[in-house]
Image (cartoon, rainbow, N blue to C red; front, side, top):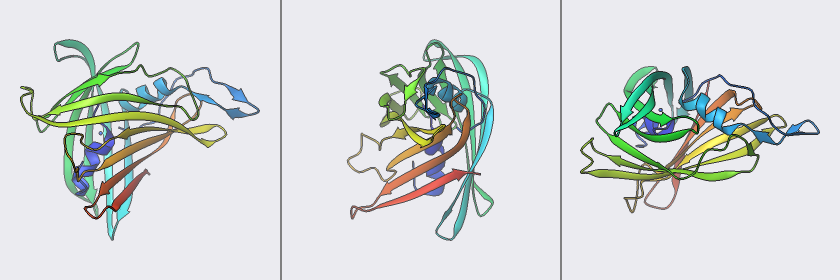
Length: 235
């Protein structure tokens, strides 16, 4: 699954594509005015499969950086000999309001339940996802789980594997009626030292699964054991 953090990081020189604002109703537990469960499957659908746009900004050193994201459903497609749905993620990265990079990727998935199958991008990369767990319709604050393992190849021939990544999700409390739903992406497991590091993209959601805000955190390690962290927040 191509995440927003992977689209942004390379363009920022940290090396390493989603955000939006819609939702559906769902049941949730409310104890003394505190929401304890959230519809995480609905949130995932809103983030990765629905038409939407978002803009994330940060200051890195003295430089102003931004990422403008447009997610566009592509309808029925065929991927890896399977009938799937697709969404295109177009990301424009800017530094000091000048375009530094533009990337286009397509995520492939099926519904009922929501399963991600992989992605392709404009550079020719071809990725296959092994989703080991079903995304629950409802999750309790504090819950977390492995989502999938992503194997990325240089092209569709799949002769040259260039990356393997684990992705997990977690749900943590923000306020009494909002929570942060996060997707964590590991470093490249094929490398003993991955200069791209790890990433986390988080979405503030309400009890309906609406996306209220978003942020992406990129953590790049250094050879001396320290790390450089950049967080971009929705504007």
